[in-house]
Length: 287
Image 1 (cartoon, rainbow, N blue to C red):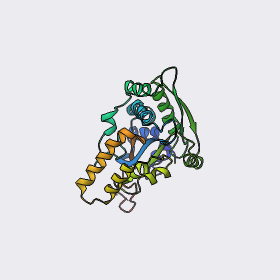
Image 2 (image 1 turned 60 degrees about the vertical axis):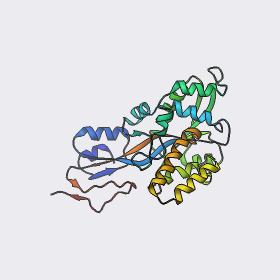
Image 3 (image 1 turned 120 degrees about the horizontal axis):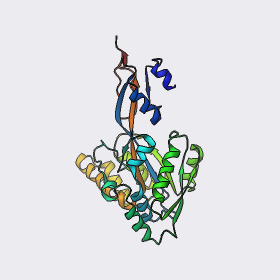
Image 4 (image 1 turned 135 degrees about the vertical axis):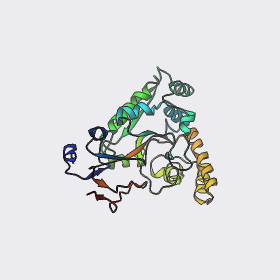
């Protein structure tokens, strides 16, 4: 569907299929209604944590320090998504801004200190590949990779080679340990903090996503979070894990998506579910 057709009134509503410029144009048009909500899907950087160079957590920390989320979102998404500082999304119980507290955004000085502690310099740069997949997440992916390359190289001590592969090959790449660092996204299987941490930091789940992070203490904490029934105790466990994340950095959270629905002005009953399910039943046209 094209924007022109929607504005003519030939489509009642549209959901999830828009790029940032489409969203921007429709919001400004005044011809349709906008329904917006915070989404549960997140985007992040993954590392191959059992293979050089990113088997060294200090280098993963350096990447986390150099990333600058607000300008990334402004340039690529026209400010339409939200900076995320934890793998547990905003709005979910137990969320804390752990990465913001420890690294902030674009902390070049800290990144340089961390790199220097491992012998890197402007004449001996940390060189690595950053991978993205060009169509699975939409046509903004190439721009995310380009901005991240610029931000990491702003340290003067990293050299980033950007590479891409279509989704099937991309999955093969992480299974075969081809990619040292890559971009990924997560749509939850169930709405609980466990589903935002276990797949990435648990030994079994992490292997399945190509991260290969394994730590007995973490596995123990994750099991506790899954089995304890007291909500306050569970929240404390996941908050502790989020703080631990800033030390080990198996992934770097980047942003949390927003949900947009655009509808003709006479459409009523649109409800956005936190599970990303679109409820068609209540929708009707006002007379």
